[in-house]
Image (cartoon, rainbow, N blue to C red; front, side, top):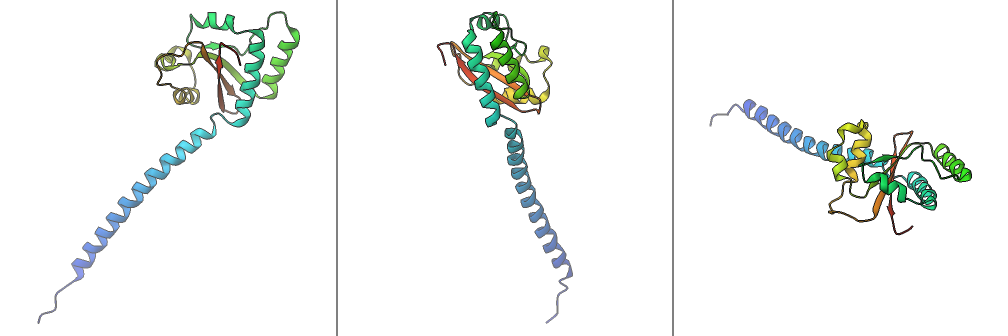
Length: 170
């Protein structure tokens, strides 16, 4: 019996195993990278401190009444209320400023609950991409929610928080 030359078969086996290993590792990497990216994104969204600050601002604004904000919202998709003026109430105005400074708040926005129209017409507002990505996570699938609004806070450390405001009360 004649002995066969098996050198070529070893090379082919090595190439096949290497190709399969690379394919499996690539699939694992893609899954882990997607998971890690979601984790990184969510780290900056709706942290406990941010939601607590948003609830404090919500309570303060609700004490003033949101009717004026709702009327202004009829003409806009989003309102910047960072420099909101309270009606002749110096103590509320001072507390509002204290909350903004203490919580490290950069911007405060008031929007309708359903922000899909805002997301579709985002260009005129010149928001940065981090804020736009956060808004996309808030997109709703419902048609319209009557008398429900959002208070969205942007913090100086590029984190974000949002709370719902119902016109019927807290």
